[in-house]
Image (cartoon, rainbow, N blue to C red; front, side, top):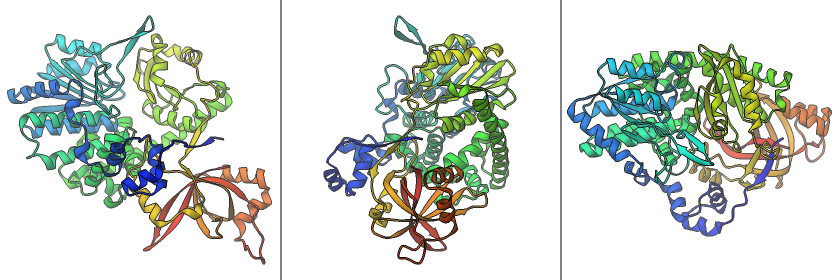
Length: 597
């Protein structure tokens, strides 16, 4: 079971609360998000797009925009080469549409996941050369494509790299030697010497900033403001889908991008919401990350991401709805395939003694390689260990990894870089290719260099405030809503109470994957508390702790606290967050349980 920790960051919460018009509880939550200076609190609560960092703060941005300005004015052919995930598709759309709106002669190419693999490759470079392309502009890739960019330069092409991934490096005598590709200009916040105040941006945000900088040089910023707001929507969409931290500049981008998206003029986004039965006004970071984003990703996984790009650039409503429906169907198929292979992966861990490894390497030869990352993420959630899922490919074995907070996946892989025919990524996720016979070698070597301790492999639950549920009020819930959007780096605030009395339980949902409990607070007030997911593990825990009869009674009847009925003996410590449940116009407070013990 996960260990619970109360966040213990110190500050004068009453002073912060008074300064910014919030409660001390909210002040404590914001301090737990790493905020220390007044300016950080102000920007988090009241920041606007004017608080975004200027594009020129990124190393190489001025040079890239100046070079593009010249290419646009000279009418040179520019090809945007992106990636097949949501970030890469959104970045490609931002650059392509941004260039076209500025009058550029521009087109796009997105790698086919199965045929081309990730990012820029020789085939794409040669295609561009044969098409008479003057300038290759990458987005969400290119930082690790040294050989391919050298080929483009040999062919006389200009190359501008925009990326956000880690820069490849070699270790020599304990020193890192960075290996930037030989492009004309590189824009990547991770490169050495970049002093941008916030480097945790996705590829689409780098692309958006390049268009802003370009428009500044072309004198288009004011006349194209409404158009640029549409590009900001895509930057926000990609930020959520690429699981960037929703802090600092990212928080502003997503907050404002979401507000624009609710009234979007992008036919593709509107159609995607429609076919997924999402009311635009109820759009959140969650619905982007778990409903809409996977539809965009599904094309790059099971088909070609060109279809997703076409959707985002579509002007005809009927055609947008047709394409969006196809993407949703692809994603539904992807879900079924994922469930099938997750079961195989778990069986492999349980039956083949892989569970003793600190880093799990699972080989699913028949699995579609595009599903490896999703499956790795699901297995990581179950075992709280770094996970690599490998699949058979045409030219060997490919795989994707998903990590835990205490394991820097890219750096650990770099320790054994000689095993890979290709690899890349960052702290929390990575992709790789190895030779067919090296699966066991990789599993052994990645575990040999692993330095994770038993403590590192304990999942930690960080509680913002230990607070009895009786303290929850509607005004507090409304105030907490101001901390949206929630996601990586800015999780929904989590509270905890010890020994909460559970009175009754009822299973809900057609799949039985939700339970509505009635609980009693210290003041004698009853609350509804929802728990989502398979109820079996919690039922088993309660049966072991309180007996099967107590659990049977919990599900079988309500309880009277004043005689005439049986009294529940089930008391659990819980983590929870408050919310408002609205049903047929009636709104009332409820609690959502996250963990129990």
